[in-house]
Image (cartoon, rainbow, N blue to C red):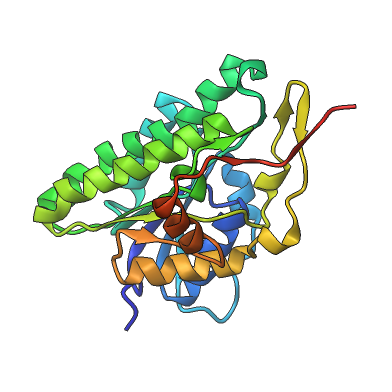
Length: 260
């Protein structure tokens, strides 16, 4: 039996590229999914794959860019399905451009969604998990979470934060039998590649050689979750870049071009 079978799993960012793929593959594993995104109607409009052993037990709409949105999601989940067995913090956003040309309100929002919201949700759900001595937290970091990446500077900062949070949290929760898993994708073929560019440069399309399909990233991520690993490097390049960075620290850069 899969580790994920019959588990109640909260998945944030359920309607994005990774979220859609996580939904499909987790249902195939027999999980009971609690899907969350900013627009509940979009979740409800999506057809659940046929022939799978899992099911969607609840759909929640919440804006994780706000304090109240995180609190609302927690309250909805606890009221309707109770404490999840696993929380997958998948929701995220990205902006491109030179940092000094980026509007402050955009990087405030990005840090909230990518870093503060996972911390807030963890603080809320961890209490019951600790009391029950069971649970599992999963965080979507990034290769940009260990290689500082120019022209997506705030995104990189947010993913460094998620990485270090997950690592520190794992040590705290170990005594309660609650694992923590960090996942580090490289570029993946999802809509996040079409994120907005601010200022005088815009992001260029990454060469297809360096772009992993979301189904591969999620499949590798799920294998790591099942094994309760701390660090998961899904796809072709994350593990290579991790070891290369250990040998000689790298500063990366999102390919950009000047705006016409």
